[in-house]
Image (cartoon, rainbow, N blue to C red):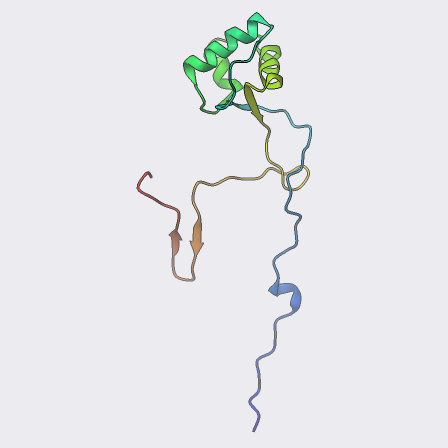
Length: 128
């Protein structure tokens, strides 16, 4: 005698939604920057760019920073100098990540495994 098998769920419920996994380069305003660790000595023409680079070296080093941090340090009228540093390759710009046009992408510090009875943080190490 043949055993009856349970009905299969509809195919639409068994797959994750299909989305394009790519970075969309939109013309969003960039607010985060970081000094390039590998950038050697680069000749800068603008005196304001030299002053801004000295401020970045003194307060941030190679850590990421945003324009709001420069505002809090009392810097003003620095956009031309910051653009000059970015074009020279001394500072790297990090625009917002977008997966789908018009939507932002979140970034998390841990990998989480969701189980039926519990949630487990897999990537937690000694430094957290």
